[in-house]
Image (cartoon, rainbow, N blue to C red; front, side, top):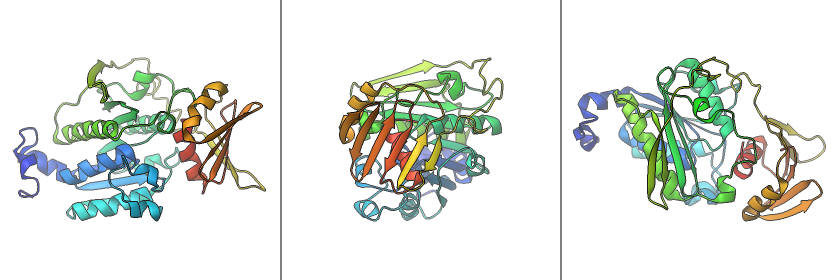
Length: 336
């Protein structure tokens, strides 16, 4: 252990005792894409003894500029992201245990997916899953490190139930689908995801070795060279960490996915059904493919998949591989 982690052990914040704690730690990384691949890489190379990697998606070429664990061969073979991540990380560190799960995280399985770990890392790309993670971690008293990135802008926040503010304290209600930009519409720099994810890794190591967590929200803009910490106080009236009302975990705020009978279409109905600004959605989706406005719908052709978006937030995907692929596209293009 001394040779592999010598430089890390020499850092006064870690030391030999800290490295022993890192080796004994059990961490779940939820999502192994742009943020999650960097997080998993950092934690594996730091020597975290057990990593559970969870992702629903497959590798494609559009991932390669920022999702650092994947290769062109992974994309050509459309390998599951969690499986490819685990294989590459085992080649980098054979001394740790890595479990790869190909699952779509939802209210029915998240408590099982985070069972038996000490820490949860947010590598997801949508608010629906993040609010679900918040519910589950607050319920079980598990610390988790939130992260998000878009364009050149990113943020991260460490959440320790009972000590710090939770995600619901900071954001209030979950944003309505279609009201926030996504990586597919606004783009994202690999520098952004790398900075945010490595800040998350640092926070994870602090929690593992017993250092005090950051209690603020860290905001960065890598293009402008800007960073700021925003204090976030616990809200005593927060329905989640204050009232222990786990709406998302109880399934009341879950989007619904349905395969339409007699067709190859998959329909997604968001948990929060509100009127979308279709003019804005038409403009946003132009960067993702060919867009048409027909009556009260926006139609997008992106690669082999055609999307019909309705004003109430419903979306129909024709040509999606399966339900997980449709849900991933909804999160990427519209936002959950």
